[in-house]
Image (cartoon, rainbow, N blue to C red; front, side, top):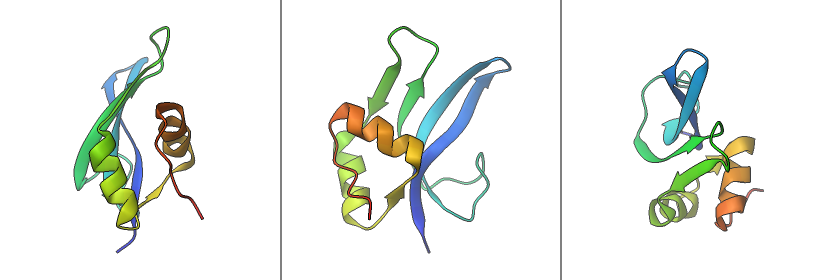
Length: 84
């Protein structure tokens, strides 16, 4: 099973908010998740990024791969993504 750190959309129409989740890469974007580790709101100034650093590092150590967007968010928060 390939596990990814990625975003899932929540919030109202035209007011997107995103959860940072751990999910099987085969699951749909807003489908079943293994764990929610944070959230992201790009519409605030500055953008709100909240990620549980301990859980993110734990999943990355176990081989979970972040999506491109989540890798950028992790870099902003100072968490090494370790992408190959």
